[in-house]
Length: 101
Image (cartoon, rainbow, N blue to C red; front, side):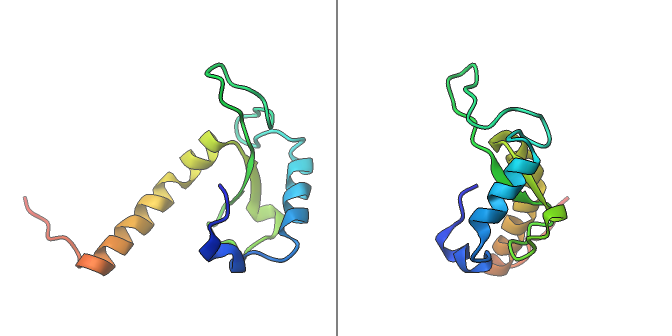
């Protein structure tokens, strides 16, 4: 995933080198499904590997916390976390939803 402008300050200055190291460690392949970086899928889309923070904390750039992932695997890995943070943001803005049975 591209780094959002509001989160740039959460990444270390040497992020580009860290990213290159993780891609090298992964042999330029997704560490979950094995698809190669920049390969073309059957539907014509290009695979671009991103670096995932397993604990979802950009400040934690320990190499054991980072994985090179394709878009599909990264989105799948992040899905539960995104849903949780969206729900939390909604509750903060609008209050906790009342449960009806």
